[in-house]
Length: 381
Image (cartoon, rainbow, N blue to C red; front, side, top):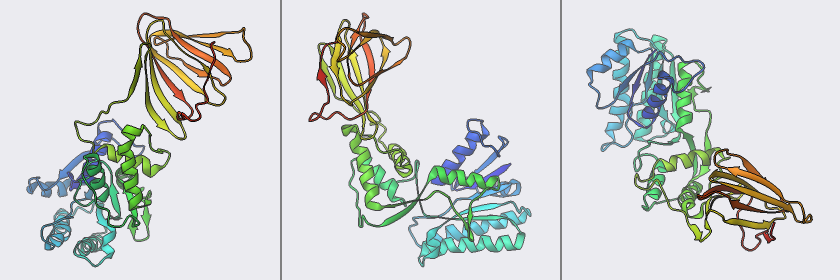
């Protein structure tokens, strides 16, 4: 299958090309799409004469090229209507009636230069389909967000993510504006559905099935939460599909020299204890380092429960039920054999480093530590 993608270096085009290459190279699998793909990438920098060759051989056309922010409003019609006309004329020259997908906009319903140019491009395609019987897929996109979207251009999400990540100011005129958004991965999967005749048609147009409705102010609050999470250690609620996608998007805009961030290590003669991740509904994760011969713990809990995983060094975790003073239970642990040990409530417990190197333990607890209600009671094992 020969696939022509116009606007191949734009936001949607770049993501589509990447995923089609993954399928072509066997890095990703699609149940209905083979690896026998040839991708013709066409963009502003492409030699114009190549468009003629591509239109001759294409089996499917993704027409993603367009103008969003011209210096002169007349460029809207030139880019969104004029180039579409040129593309269709080239296909006609070779009697190529392969299917064509075009990326339009919900603004095609509005009376503005951008919307009018998008509507004109749609009408061109519909007339072309009537004339040639070629199948056409017209998508009126709402706001699209995700990695590789250009900030300070035509996406508020991209701009907010970039500016917040780079400590730049943002402007929110009306936080109560309701936004309809679609995520780039969902867009790409829907476009690939076009190749295998599984596109999602709704009325006269096609659309990405998964849409998200959220207020602009809520988006800004989430992005600020993502930034603050490096100091609060709180992870977002990734069970919410939009939050998960927005967090991935935000991380793609981090400055290249700021991928890492320090943690506060509580260090003493015994080793160190460092909190890593916190979540109101999933507890917190910490890293404990014990020096050789050191014993830590000797306490128990009513409701708080933990999981210990020794990832380096060796030691023993001891338990004693608080109302049974004589029986001590021992679990020997080592980084050579990763094994999770549950810490049941009602058992006083400790962990001792039996080796001659530092012992590193990943510790999970079911709740974030609350100094006002620590639910931790000293008692030697």
